[in-house]
Length: 298
Image (cartoon, rainbow, N blue to C red):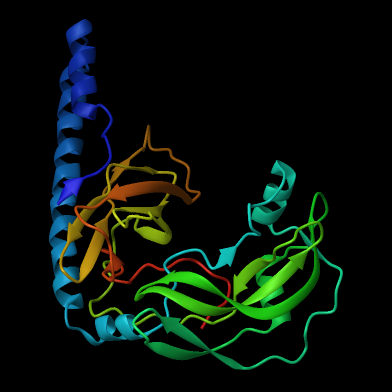
C-alpha cells in the first residue's frame, strides 16, 4: 500500500531546521513534540493500513459483494450535457448551481419501471423517477443566468456503473437555444449493500463520496471529509482482485489549543496499479462502497 500524495515537510524536520538556525530554550521541547506527533501519524497510518486489509478480506465473497455485482450503482455522471457542451461560462455556472427555469408542461404519464442494460446482455428492472422528480433533481430555480427547459421526453443514456457501462432510461430535457437535449438518468439506483464489517469509530476523516473515475480506470477522484482541526496527510490504497480500499490518515492542525470546528471536504485523486474495472471502491472507515452522488435515492 503506497501513499499517492506528496507529503509536506514534516513537523520534525521543521523543528530541526528552526533549532539549527538559532538555538532557543524551547528547541528541545519543540523537537520532542514534533517527534511525538510524527510517531502518532505513523502509528495511525499503520493502523489504517491494517484496517484496509480487514475491510478487503470481509468484502470478498460477502453478501454485500454479491449485491454490489448484481445491482445498479452509478460510478460516473448521471447527467449528460447537450452535444458540444454549454455555450458560455454563465450557462455552465447556471448548470453547476441548478439554475433552471421551466417553460413547458412536463409529461404527467410515464412508465413506473425501466430496464438498465449492460453490454453482456444482462439487464435489471429498476423503478423510474418521473419527469417532474427528475427535473427537481437538477433545478434550483434561483435568480440569475439560467437555462430554460422547453420540453421533456423519455429516452436513454450511457452511465458508468459498478458492473461496467450500461444503457439507462433517462429524461431528455430540451433546452432553449440548443439542438440536442440535456440527459438525466431516470433509473433509481439500487440500495447500497450493508457493509460486511462494523464501522470504525473514534477516527476522524473518511472518504465522503466518489467524484470520478478516469477513462482508463487507473485514477479515482474522491472527496475526503475533514474537520477544521485536521489536514490530509495522504491517501493510501489497498488493492485486491475484488476491491480497492481507500484510507485517509489525517494530521492535526491544532495550534495553542484552538482550531476551526467547521467540517469541510478536500478533493484528491488516487492513482491505482491497474484499472478499477468491476472492483468495488471502498472507504476503509465505513466499509461502504463509494458511488457517484445522485439526488435520485433508492
